[in-house]
Length: 157
Length: 94
Image (cartoon, rainbow over all chains, first blue to last red; front, top):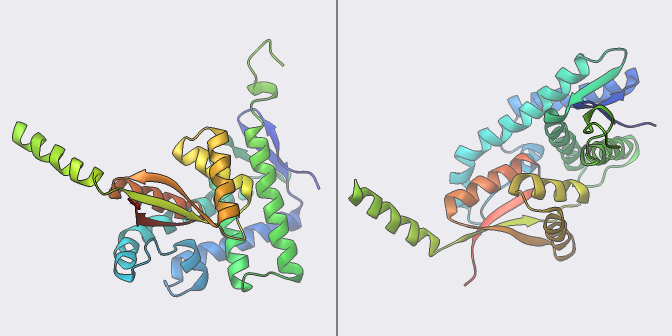
């Protein structure tokens, strides 16, 4: 399984159709949940957790913070969907400034999978969570690997 | 004009007198490398400091990652939530 590779101004990876489809479906599910789920939903409660121990303070904070936090997550989900949809020949190109949105979205998907499976995913869910974790860690590694190739200053290797 | 400035300064002093901590809690899901990256990216911490804080979260169960006036710390907690980290506010122990 090969991961993202750093190219000029972006990370690129070829997604086999099955992988692209699984990822898109998961992200769409998360996107829908953000739109329609209530605060009592366990996944949404994990994605926008209490900020204070004291319930009154926590509720006051959630009133103004929760919509913005969920908006940020929706933005991440949209970025992944858009980049998957724009793939050419299966190659997904994520511009460097959008990589943080991918990292957030992959994190949110893992949090959701863990939450839905009571903190301990098994079987296919565990494989999926592991795969998302691998993708996330691997993107991060490439992002932090510094400029290479066309990004590198001329005359340096 | 100067009265207003004077008033703001007093306000600020009062707030600085009662700082708040941003506490990040360990969770079994988030990758260690991701948590370090969040600390470095959001707070602008140098990599060694970001990694030290991440290790403290991981080994001690939580760590104070920032302290200061309440509004600013609430902003940080909201940002941590947007990144998927478990973060809370509490008044600094003095």
